[in-house]
Amino acid sequence: MTRTVLFLLSLSVLSGCTNVTGDTPRTISPQEAENLTAERLFSVADTFFSEAGYACSADADAGQFRCSRALRDLYIHQTTAEVNIYPGGEEDKTHRMIATRWDEGLIPGELIANTYANDDVEAFCAYLASEKLGRCSDYQG
Image (tube, rainbow, N blue to C red; front, top):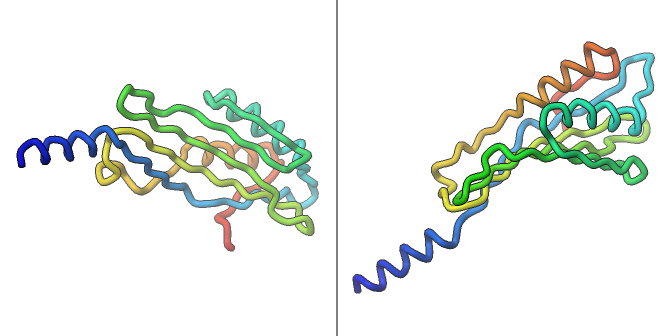
């Protein structure tokens, strides 16, 4: 009986877990008189997030932009932040921005916060507004 319990405990420790949680999705809209193209938005986002320590890739033809940054990289547990930007609507030239946090490893999901707010996304939205390129709002979908 003791061996069975120890075996089951060791399996639960070695199996690990994955926990994904997201920030509030946002809509990026161009300024009233400005037309913010995907190429321009992705270029600005690439510069901004790269300077914040993210590894970014963009495919303007496919309308996709993705950045990731390791927040925690321990032997037993890794946490990664991701920021994705997708086209929102052709008629209004908006984009959707979704930020997520991935936790993978041996720390149980019950011990990890299930709320997430990415400060870099907030700073990026403030930067877009200060440069009069666009504005962010909570996604209403």
